[in-house]
Image (cartoon, rainbow, N blue to C red; front, side):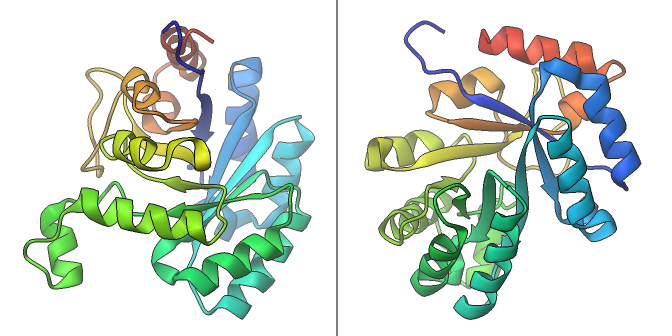
Length: 233
Protein backbone atom coordinates (compact mmCIF):
# COMPACT_ATOMS: atom_id res chain seq x y z
CA UNK A 1 0.00 0.00 0.00
CA UNK A 2 2.57 2.52 -1.18
CA UNK A 3 1.84 6.10 -0.24
CA UNK A 4 -0.53 5.15 2.58
CA UNK A 5 0.57 5.79 6.16
CA UNK A 6 0.53 2.49 8.07
CA UNK A 7 -2.22 2.16 10.63
CA UNK A 8 -1.53 0.78 14.10
CA UNK A 9 -3.24 -2.56 14.77
CA UNK A 10 -4.81 -3.02 18.21
CA UNK A 11 -6.01 -6.42 19.38
CA UNK A 12 -9.07 -6.55 21.59
CA UNK A 13 -8.53 -8.48 24.81
CA UNK A 14 -12.10 -9.73 24.94
CA UNK A 15 -11.17 -12.15 27.69
CA UNK A 16 -12.90 -13.17 30.93
CA UNK A 17 -9.98 -12.43 33.24
CA UNK A 18 -6.40 -11.24 33.57
CA UNK A 19 -4.86 -14.70 33.15
CA UNK A 20 -6.62 -15.26 29.82
CA UNK A 21 -5.65 -11.78 28.64
CA UNK A 22 -1.98 -12.26 29.51
CA UNK A 23 -1.98 -15.68 27.84
CA UNK A 24 -3.13 -14.04 24.60
CA UNK A 25 -0.51 -11.30 24.94
CA UNK A 26 2.15 -13.99 25.38
CA UNK A 27 0.86 -15.92 22.38
CA UNK A 28 0.97 -12.91 20.09
CA UNK A 29 4.35 -11.74 21.38
CA UNK A 30 6.07 -9.18 19.18
CA UNK A 31 3.36 -9.40 16.51
CA UNK A 32 1.20 -7.05 18.62
CA UNK A 33 2.23 -4.39 21.11
CA UNK A 34 -1.05 -2.52 21.50
CA UNK A 35 -4.16 -3.96 23.17
CA UNK A 36 -7.71 -2.90 23.84
CA UNK A 37 -9.17 -3.48 27.30
CA UNK A 38 -12.95 -3.20 27.16
CA UNK A 39 -15.78 -3.14 29.66
CA UNK A 40 -16.02 -6.90 30.26
CA UNK A 41 -12.35 -7.43 31.09
CA UNK A 42 -12.05 -4.20 33.07
CA UNK A 43 -15.14 -5.10 35.11
CA UNK A 44 -13.56 -8.47 35.91
CA UNK A 45 -9.98 -7.38 36.56
CA UNK A 46 -9.90 -3.60 37.02
CA UNK A 47 -6.64 -1.62 36.86
CA UNK A 48 -4.62 -4.79 37.51
CA UNK A 49 -5.01 -6.02 33.95
CA UNK A 50 -3.89 -2.65 32.59
CA UNK A 51 -0.81 -2.71 34.82
CA UNK A 52 0.02 -6.29 33.81
CA UNK A 53 -0.38 -5.67 30.06
CA UNK A 54 1.69 -2.49 30.27
CA UNK A 55 4.23 -4.49 32.25
CA UNK A 56 4.71 -6.63 29.14
CA UNK A 57 5.84 -3.51 27.28
CA UNK A 58 2.53 -2.95 25.51
CA UNK A 59 0.32 0.10 25.08
CA UNK A 60 -3.28 -0.02 26.26
CA UNK A 61 -6.43 1.40 24.72
CA UNK A 62 -9.07 1.51 27.47
CA UNK A 63 -12.44 1.36 25.75
CA UNK A 64 -14.99 2.13 28.46
CA UNK A 65 -17.01 4.62 26.36
CA UNK A 66 -17.65 6.99 29.26
CA UNK A 67 -20.98 8.83 29.09
CA UNK A 68 -22.08 10.82 32.14
CA UNK A 69 -22.17 14.35 33.49
CA UNK A 70 -18.92 16.28 32.84
CA UNK A 71 -17.70 16.22 36.45
CA UNK A 72 -18.12 12.45 36.75
CA UNK A 73 -16.41 11.79 33.43
CA UNK A 74 -13.54 14.10 34.35
CA UNK A 75 -12.99 12.23 37.61
CA UNK A 76 -12.94 8.88 35.84
CA UNK A 77 -10.63 10.16 33.12
CA UNK A 78 -8.11 11.43 35.66
CA UNK A 79 -7.95 7.91 37.13
CA UNK A 80 -7.63 6.43 33.64
CA UNK A 81 -4.79 8.76 32.67
CA UNK A 82 -2.96 7.92 35.90
CA UNK A 83 -2.84 4.26 34.79
CA UNK A 84 -0.64 5.19 31.82
CA UNK A 85 -3.39 4.56 29.28
CA UNK A 86 -2.51 5.68 25.76
CA UNK A 87 -6.06 5.98 24.37
CA UNK A 88 -9.46 6.12 26.09
CA UNK A 89 -13.01 6.59 24.85
CA UNK A 90 -16.04 8.69 25.66
CA UNK A 91 -19.35 8.82 23.82
CA UNK A 92 -19.53 11.87 21.56
CA UNK A 93 -23.26 11.99 22.24
CA UNK A 94 -22.41 13.02 25.82
CA UNK A 95 -22.01 16.55 24.45
CA UNK A 96 -19.41 19.28 24.19
CA UNK A 97 -19.03 20.00 27.91
CA UNK A 98 -18.49 16.32 28.69
CA UNK A 99 -15.89 15.86 25.94
CA UNK A 100 -14.04 19.01 26.97
CA UNK A 101 -13.99 17.85 30.60
CA UNK A 102 -12.60 14.46 29.53
CA UNK A 103 -9.88 16.01 27.39
CA UNK A 104 -8.82 18.40 30.14
CA UNK A 105 -8.69 15.61 32.73
CA UNK A 106 -6.80 13.20 30.44
CA UNK A 107 -3.84 15.50 29.93
CA UNK A 108 -1.33 15.38 27.11
CA UNK A 109 -0.33 11.72 27.28
CA UNK A 110 -3.76 10.06 27.18
CA UNK A 111 -5.63 10.63 23.94
CA UNK A 112 -9.41 10.96 24.17
CA UNK A 113 -11.33 9.35 21.32
CA UNK A 114 -15.02 10.15 20.93
CA UNK A 115 -17.24 7.27 19.86
CA UNK A 116 -19.63 8.39 17.12
CA UNK A 117 -22.08 5.64 16.07
CA UNK A 118 -21.46 2.07 17.25
CA UNK A 119 -20.58 -0.34 14.45
CA UNK A 120 -23.31 -2.68 15.72
CA UNK A 121 -25.97 -0.12 14.76
CA UNK A 122 -27.51 -0.01 11.31
CA UNK A 123 -30.00 2.52 9.95
CA UNK A 124 -33.01 0.68 11.41
CA UNK A 125 -31.48 0.53 14.89
CA UNK A 126 -30.44 4.17 14.75
CA UNK A 127 -33.93 5.16 13.64
CA UNK A 128 -35.39 3.33 16.61
CA UNK A 129 -33.04 5.14 18.99
CA UNK A 130 -33.52 8.63 17.56
CA UNK A 131 -37.16 8.37 16.56
CA UNK A 132 -36.20 9.66 13.11
CA UNK A 133 -37.15 7.22 10.31
CA UNK A 134 -34.93 9.15 7.89
CA UNK A 135 -31.80 9.23 10.04
CA UNK A 136 -28.58 8.65 8.09
CA UNK A 137 -25.72 6.96 10.01
CA UNK A 138 -23.11 8.75 7.89
CA UNK A 139 -24.59 12.17 8.60
CA UNK A 140 -24.77 11.34 12.30
CA UNK A 141 -21.12 10.27 12.34
CA UNK A 142 -19.98 13.47 10.62
CA UNK A 143 -22.00 15.66 12.96
CA UNK A 144 -20.55 13.95 16.04
CA UNK A 145 -17.02 13.97 14.58
CA UNK A 146 -17.20 17.73 14.07
CA UNK A 147 -18.43 18.13 17.64
CA UNK A 148 -15.57 15.99 18.92
CA UNK A 149 -12.98 18.00 17.01
CA UNK A 150 -14.32 21.33 18.22
CA UNK A 151 -14.35 20.02 21.81
CA UNK A 152 -10.66 19.09 21.62
CA UNK A 153 -10.78 15.29 21.27
CA UNK A 154 -7.72 13.68 19.74
CA UNK A 155 -9.85 11.53 17.49
CA UNK A 156 -13.01 9.59 16.87
CA UNK A 157 -14.18 6.02 16.66
CA UNK A 158 -16.22 5.25 13.57
CA UNK A 159 -16.76 2.41 11.13
CA UNK A 160 -14.64 2.00 8.03
CA UNK A 161 -17.69 2.93 5.98
CA UNK A 162 -17.74 6.45 7.42
CA UNK A 163 -14.00 6.94 7.93
CA UNK A 164 -13.42 8.34 4.40
CA UNK A 165 -16.14 10.93 4.97
CA UNK A 166 -14.61 12.00 8.28
CA UNK A 167 -11.14 12.20 6.73
CA UNK A 168 -12.43 14.20 3.76
CA UNK A 169 -14.34 16.61 6.00
CA UNK A 170 -11.79 17.08 8.79
CA UNK A 171 -8.48 16.09 7.24
CA UNK A 172 -5.66 15.40 9.68
CA UNK A 173 -7.28 17.34 12.53
CA UNK A 174 -8.65 14.09 14.00
CA UNK A 175 -7.19 10.63 14.41
CA UNK A 176 -9.54 7.85 13.34
CA UNK A 177 -9.91 4.49 15.05
CA UNK A 178 -11.88 1.86 13.14
CA UNK A 179 -13.33 -1.17 14.97
CA UNK A 180 -15.21 -4.03 13.34
CA UNK A 181 -12.20 -5.16 11.29
CA UNK A 182 -12.60 -8.53 9.63
CA UNK A 183 -10.40 -10.58 7.33
CA UNK A 184 -12.01 -11.73 4.07
CA UNK A 185 -14.33 -14.66 4.73
CA UNK A 186 -14.74 -13.95 8.44
CA UNK A 187 -18.20 -13.79 9.97
CA UNK A 188 -19.55 -10.31 10.70
CA UNK A 189 -20.84 -11.49 14.08
CA UNK A 190 -22.80 -8.72 15.81
CA UNK A 191 -21.23 -5.97 13.71
CA UNK A 192 -23.36 -4.21 11.09
CA UNK A 193 -20.67 -2.14 9.34
CA UNK A 194 -17.38 -4.02 8.87
CA UNK A 195 -14.33 -3.62 6.61
CA UNK A 196 -11.05 -5.39 5.88
CA UNK A 197 -7.77 -4.04 7.27
CA UNK A 198 -6.73 -2.72 3.86
CA UNK A 199 -10.05 -1.00 3.28
CA UNK A 200 -9.86 0.68 6.68
CA UNK A 201 -6.37 2.01 5.98
CA UNK A 202 -7.35 3.34 2.58
CA UNK A 203 -10.37 4.92 4.25
CA UNK A 204 -8.03 6.94 6.45
CA UNK A 205 -7.81 4.92 9.68
CA UNK A 206 -4.94 5.59 12.08
CA UNK A 207 -5.81 2.64 14.34
CA UNK A 208 -7.51 -0.69 13.61
CA UNK A 209 -9.15 -2.80 16.30
CA UNK A 210 -9.01 -6.52 15.61
CA UNK A 211 -11.15 -8.91 17.59
CA UNK A 212 -12.36 -12.36 16.66
CA UNK A 213 -10.43 -12.45 13.38
CA UNK A 214 -7.34 -12.84 15.56
CA UNK A 215 -8.52 -13.90 19.00
CA UNK A 216 -10.89 -16.65 17.80
CA UNK A 217 -8.51 -17.97 15.15
CA UNK A 218 -7.15 -21.51 15.46
CA UNK A 219 -3.68 -19.92 15.48
CA UNK A 220 -3.96 -16.31 16.75
CA UNK A 221 -0.29 -15.54 16.15
CA UNK A 222 -0.51 -16.69 12.54
CA UNK A 223 -3.70 -14.66 12.08
CA UNK A 224 -1.91 -11.58 13.41
CA UNK A 225 1.03 -12.20 11.10
CA UNK A 226 -1.42 -12.30 8.17
CA UNK A 227 -2.90 -8.97 9.28
CA UNK A 228 0.54 -7.40 9.54
CA UNK A 229 1.47 -8.74 6.11
CA UNK A 230 -1.70 -7.33 4.61
CA UNK A 231 -0.88 -3.98 6.22
CA UNK A 232 2.76 -4.30 5.07
CA UNK A 233 4.05 -3.70 8.59
